[in-house]
Image 1 (cartoon, rainbow, N blue to C red):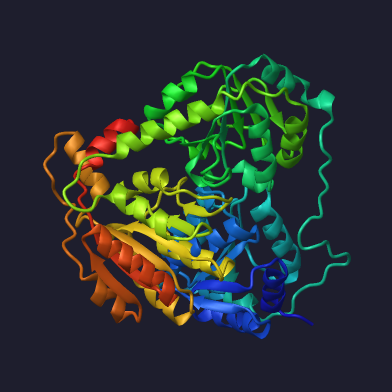
Image 2: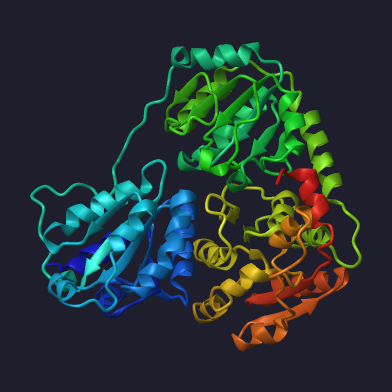
Length: 536
């Protein structure tokens, strides 16, 4: 008969996740061994939060829940930020925290905290693993984590349950549901078709829901049918190839996109999740047609009607039956791209972050997967980097957490071992996860890390300057990126010119080793760029 850990390890493997990641505790070793016996890897991370972010990103890329674990007490408390990322960025994840068996829990106070209470606000479901019910628990967890919208589930795993004999189910359900979603007929889509028929200048705003339904191809066909310009959320860069003539850019909640939106006569949101938007009231009075796989409960976007269904089928039907548009989109999208480009082209002494991005995009192959950290440089990366396929741009947007780029890149390398992977990060964000360079080396997961080195926490300095507050408490000081990288067994170089950066990036592609490129940038244009693109 199988034990609890054997049931869990087999379920994780069968669901499509061939590894567990995290920083283990004494109660974890039996699960790790059960995974090893099933040819599953264990990735030892130096920080639990980085492990959760890696696992969450695996879930984004594959649809299979990532698996992360921590020890009780300090490990569980430290992993919360990574789980919160999965919650707000809608990533399927199973987070496991060790805990004392019940007699020990009731006896002592050391390392005893209410871990379920800590995780409850940032997970879709939390449960204490019990050997008698583990088969049912793991099935519920898989379905909960992957159900739209995806998100994290928390397993509290007592030491007493790890090697107990697992209970049997009289009739064992499949690990994951086999669902069939019939498409709508034309009559079902009449409200949407009528609105689209009246519109002369529709605009599309697309969000993560398109990914949940694997509907990227259908979305592009729908956009082409309408001839409408496309604004994507940050998480959806690449859902339409970013060299497509209808691609306008990213919606960031700033003033610059309002001119484009207000030129339209109908806003069509597709798979838009309010967590992707800036926390401010909806700024438009235009009619809104919403297409989504789940009803909106936030009451932020004033859509009427809101059509709910599988987006793959909805978009396929609309691409077939919607009236062909006036093709106003190509010209308006191009105009918007030029306006964004001009707003970002601020003068600089030395190498600017915007020029760094242009050089990186010119050198790195078309199929490169990019990750991006939070911070001042993120605005430039989002606007300047072009992605040409779904899930080729990865970032923490719902939580907007620093420290994402490196673990996200490691997950991308695991999911796509034959494609280039680059992590864009500020010096502050990189220093939060610098120890994972060793993980990259030990696990043979080569990535390229481009560090925007402005020697400060740039976003806070920008806000201080805009508010007339003296620069204070944001200095980081210089770092020798070459020596830092070499201490972890990686390659490293510091560059200050465009040519040096170009040479370093080209060399990194050839070596196929983890490489850190510290780019000493002139960040003096950040304030002007923020003022031009975004309300603060």
